[in-house]
Image 1 (cartoon, protein in one colour):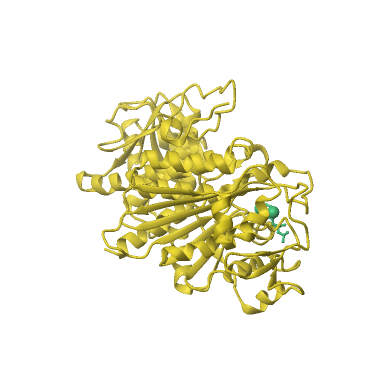
Image 2 (image 1 turned 60 degrees about the vertical axis):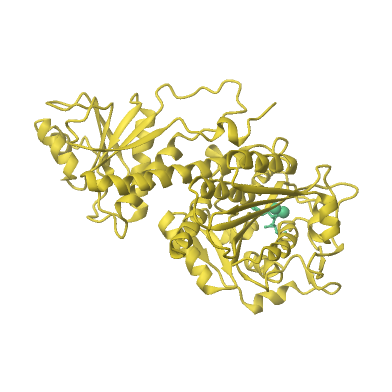
Length: 514
Ligand code: BES
Ligand code: MN
Ligand code: ZN
């Protein structure tokens, strides 16, 4: 089967956005979207629609036909009176006067899902008039776009009968109060589209199965990205290059696989100055069987998602290039499979990393840190301002933080705080764990400079301590996305996290640089 590459059609969405001014009862559309809070507080647009419909909204509220709980939706067909819209979607906003950013996101998502599921193919949303604590109009517009793109996302390139929704949402207009507001709403829309494109790319790569997303396929995707954004420089290192560089740790993982490992380097120079770049390093294990320390069979298919760190680097680089952000950025992706084979690494094997430090592989399933450590050593050659690695690194992170927060560890508190703040603004949140020397001691080995595992306790932290040993020359942060990169169960699939966090982080830096 031939999969399309990113540059052709995959990430160009069928959903268009625009910004409008005007009264909700006067603009023609298939569905007008307004918020109503508990117990019966109408937003300004809802108030106008109520008047124009001779009190239909209040009537429905009075009879309990509208649920005002946060994110609950009610669709009204053929509203009464003089209303140009064919439908009104009332979205419950809960009882708070000022919404939290999370509540607004839930409201925007619920609205998009409801319109997408309805027969309306275009909508006009007044949700940006809702008051959100510490967030401006551009943010609300951006978040509305991202939520809508999330609602319409599908991965069906491998279904022979794709069975698309009969009345998909194709057009979302974002209503704003006046001409002055249009500009900032448009800015939010532009950013939202670019972020959603990056997220979609990360989801696409994550969702593809291991046989169709090999290290070689990831290298091809990097070349396709370069075709879409000529400003990018792309370089692929082969195993022979890695041997020359002394990347014994990375190569020890790919030994057990017939697919050759690739080290993918994507460079974007958007800053007018020669400022030192931000380097992103993404774990690209295209399938993690555990190797000789093989994993149990249950849900092993999900280990195709073990390249979601890499996917987030692809997505972020693509969004940054699309927005032409004035930053210098390098994306590095060590890509390999982790499989058992007669030639695979064995527990007890000792390998020499590019840094010269020796590693005793006590568990071949702790392979992520082995490929990352050589990529992190390689990162030094770009004289980075900061390095951030992104990896589905430890099951322990899922135990510690579940599926909501990315685990964050850093050797620099200012950098950690920048990333935490970017998580808050983007809604793609992280939570910091300590990187203390006491934990590092768990990595001691009887036979080599260090072991690749640190025992049963604090697995996320000892994994980060391992990486920190290769990041002594620069400011560095580690994002463990094991719990957030994909969903299991009925809605199994890649999430595209933490593209939104990383783009926000880079946007903030672009702004601070002036
Ligand atoms: N890719 C896994 C981590 C993982 C596990 C992510 C489950 C998401 C869900 C990683 O390579 C791994 O196998 N880590 C081991 C480390 C252990 C052997 C120290 C783990 O977490 O069990
Ligand atoms: Mn593993
Ligand atoms: Zn892994």
